[in-house]
Length: 159
Image (cartoon, rainbow, N blue to C red):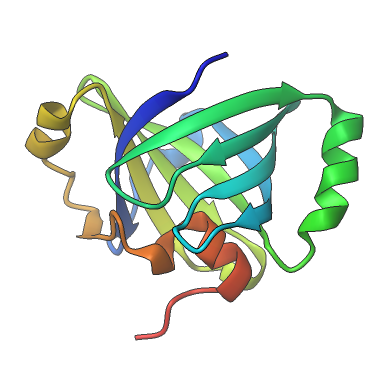
């Protein structure tokens, strides 16, 4: 696998999500951070469904470099032990929006009650043209306090 650039926007969900949320595909996600650099570059492990990955991402912004490597469950569980104090749990729902898919994340545990929406785009122009549905609230793209790594280590931002 080779590194690719990820173009995405992230929002807080402040309105009621779609009523038919249970009709859309969803997965439980466990995600823990092994290392986070001062510039926001991160190394994480993730369990989603029966898939396990080790991922390296550049710091928070609209466009990021990402390298994802599949690992087995044994390696995940071994690395998971190293992420204590830097973990998140959430259910990700895939909600269609035109020709795009909104990843609606409903957090659990210490972050219970937090709901975010992320949308990945093919191009910067497509990202700029995106008109979010009314249930999506404030954009937090590039806000380090709402990055999953910060949520895992520090909890929900104050204010």
